[in-house]
Length: 166
Image (tube, rainbow, N blue to C red):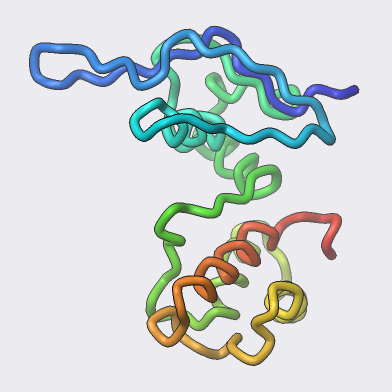
């Protein structure tokens, strides 16, 4: 099976005053296309740090990260942004919905950066919000939605650039 993600001896260290915090220390993992993986551990064990590195939102202190064959540690920011837009969908712990945009507009937003036409963005956002059971709430703002509904908007947004859903 084709490798989708590989971390080779990845570490992420932070300076905290006079000491070094090892948020992630020498982690190696290989995930193949079709694998279902859960990253589990107690609070502070490095799960979010690892996801930030894999999502190219941060750089590792040491090691190599390969996403779909690309060594993301050596890509330019514009290349990282393009890769993130096409290959990665995040559902953040706090959802990161933009409060001045409706649910539909929040789902449409990442598609702008992939040069999807406005008509296609609207169509896809409506389909995805229907898929997550929010067809009746697509014109509501985040503060008008419950926590669970906001989470479903975030899920729809994470799926917005998935070509299998278009």
